[in-house]
Length: 340
Picture 1: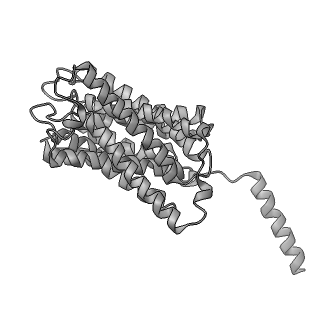
Picture 2: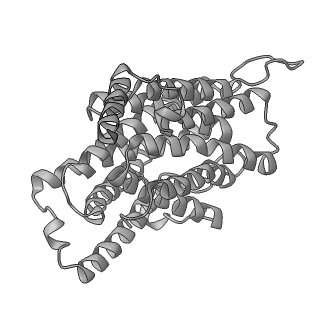
C-alpha cells in the first residue's frame, strides 16, 4: 500500500470525512443519541486494531524483512501513549460538538485546524513553508471563516452565529487537539523505519485501552445506574450507528497512512475540502439552504488548494535572471567557435 499515490488516499479521506458528520447527525434521535456515544470511538479503535493486526500478520508471512522493521523497545513503544490520549479526547469532543452545531458548521469549524497545524508543522517538525504556502494557509482560513457567515444580505439577519457559544468553543478545542495529535503522530511515524502496521498496532492498542478507561470512569460517575458498559455496549445501535463506527475507523487508518507517507498538511487539506461534499449532501438530507457566503468560501478554499500544491512557476511569471543571460551568451560564444 506504500506505493499507492498519496493523492488517491487524500481523495478517499475527503469522501469519508465529509460523510462523518452527516452519518453522526443521522444517527441522532430527537436531537440526542439513543446509544452511548462514548462506545463509538472505542469500537472504532478496536476495528483499526484488528485491521492493522491482520495486515501486519499478512506482511510478516509474505516478507521476511518485516521482522527487522519492528521495534519492540519499551522506550519507543511508550511514545504512542501520548497521541492515543489526545485522540481519545478529540473523538469524544467531536460528538459533543455536533449536539450544538449543524453538520456544515461542524465541518467548517474543523477547518480551523489548518492554521494550528501549519504553525505546529513549522515549530515542532521544523518543516519550512514557502511564502506562497503560508498565503495559501491564510486564504484557507479566510475561506472557512467566510463560509461560516450566514444570513448577511437577507431580510432577517438576527445573528451571524446562530449556534450556541458552547458549540464554537468545542469546535475550536477539537481543531487544536486534532492538530496537536496529527503533528505528534507524524513525528512518531517518521522517526524510524518501522512498518506502518506495527506502528498502527501500538497506536490503536493504547487507544483502545484509554477508551475502556473512559467507559469505566463513566460507569463509576453514574453509579452503574445502567449496569457495566460491556453489558450495554450495543444498546441503541442501528445500521447508521455501525456505519459511523466503520467510517471513523476507516478514516483513522487513512490518516495514519498519510502521516507515514505524506504529511499533516495533505491530511488537513483533505479534511478541509470535505466541506464541499458535506454541503451538497446536506442540501438533500437536511434541507440545508446554501448561502452566497458559503459558495464564496468554497471558491477561496479551492484557490488556496491550488496555490499550496501547484508548482511556483505555474502561479507567477518568474523573471529571467542575469545569470541565465550570462549562461546563454556563453553558449552562443561556444557555438560560434565550434562553427568557425
